[in-house]
Image 1 (spheres, one colour):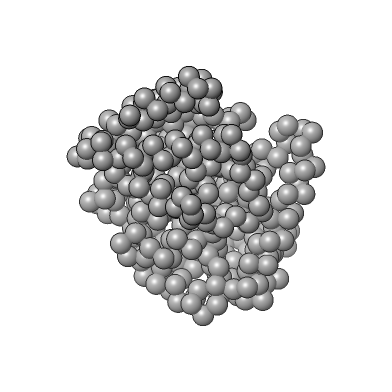
Image 2: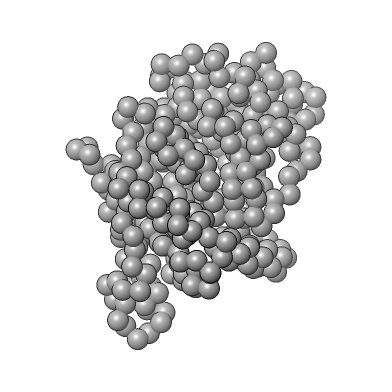
Length: 334
């Protein structure tokens, strides 16, 4: 039985709500089209799609409680490779690119000596962690596998995201955009975030940790003219990570990371509070750029006396670095 047949069967058995069945049905249609366009036989990937659906149904019945720090779940199902196996046939690798590998070499050396690295990055599509792994699969697979991602509540709450999220190392946090909704959960979410930040401080004190965070708190989206923009970075978010890093027992280095992955699984045009967004994928190249290390203390506007303005200037500077690299990734001559 193919994926579509299993969806119908699961719904008839009362295991899959109609809304999720509809979302997954549309995803399957887009997936089949994209895989075929990329020269791959759909039948080859029916088994991995079937395993994915089994995981969705399993965690619908018994939701997984993510800790403040979740470590990659590799057994009894290898959720790390499950997600990569689903996404790999969608990517046009011969047109994909990774820039700044000389900076990645420096990063790996810093991690090897026990220092930490924090990527201040943009975020474009739900499976960005998997996109990073696939771009580095042939050259730096262990580096990508060990990365820790700061994850918002959506990817650990949405039933269709959970099988992917289970395979990653995650620091789970509620972003500023969602901490107020619903109002009665605000205090709980704030306490959860405090626990997560405490756990991150412990990880940095252990040393040798590489953490990805999107200081925008969400994904990039097109503007009113339909042009995709790198979402603004939040000065308070960057300041928080900077302050925590200063208290660690090992040095922490900050780097800009630019991703151009939007077409793989575009987000809705607007931020939605409710879970259950549509998922329609495409066959596409994806790109990534590792920038040079950021001087977190000396940057344009770092000499101002007002602390709030200084933080704003730093966030603006780092955002511009990522924007510049994102533009390079999209340039036709790269």
